[in-house]
Image (cartoon, rainbow over all chains, first blue to last red; front, top):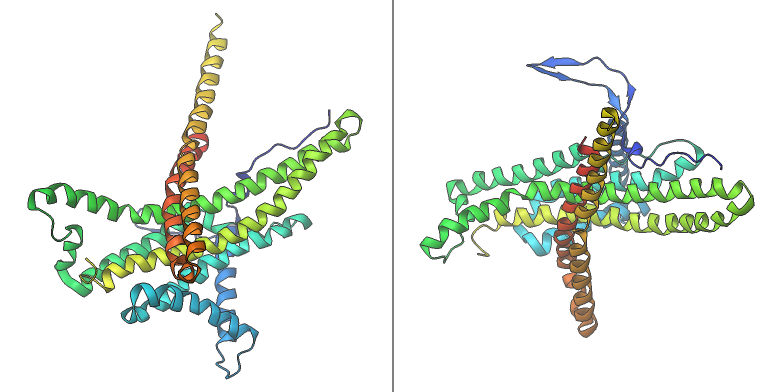
Length: 275
Length: 87
């Protein structure tokens, strides 16, 4: 029997250091400043975005391709999300939402598109958004800045968010804890949604990739095992289909993250209007 | 029974229970699958009946998709924790 490699779909998410940098101590914590593959991907994404928007923001009367793409990206946030959901008061939050959307979008797309580097033996693709530390950070920044913004704009009156108006007094005893729970679970769901989608997609891709190799090795060994070439080819077809699906999921999850941030922002911006 | 053999079988039992638990936890995704089917099916039905109003509700469709999907992802994460997080 031919030797097949071990199937380990989680190996692709391992973090390893690329550049060793000296760590420093802050209080009781040791902060490791080394550049890992995760950090390198995020830097690459940031550089890509800054370059793209700088080159695209020349504001010509007749937009070239880059400017048209950047405007399309901007319109997704401005016309599709902020306009209908937040209304004119929400225009000032477009920069944050666009940053969030573009950052997640490029990280997601990079992790899928650069997988083709793996065929040439270069592992460029690292799915940063399937690190729960990254998604939790993004979700916590988004959620708590919106929560604090509510207090800055409306003061302590903002706490009436947890007490729906027109509710009988005794019922409030039950409603307030439930409302608070459903409010403070938001960063958890926001982080887990992005994390789970990206992790799940990459695990499935990696599994089918392992099937192609493992079944292909048995098939190429000759003899009766040649029939295994059929499931190997089928697995490869699955990879092609799933890569297409992953591209859709990558765009959709970036959009959904920005859309939910907009919906959460709506409670702050239009506080007391819709209830 | 040989004591080392007994220890080995206990470890095996522990591992197999872990994997059975992970599989059972993943069955929570059934609900998310049904929910997504209902969601997109109803959207499509409404969109075919009234194509003019379909585009305006697309954002709500994706929001509903995200919220439904999260419930399934919780069980996915629990099963991942059971496989990789429990030693």
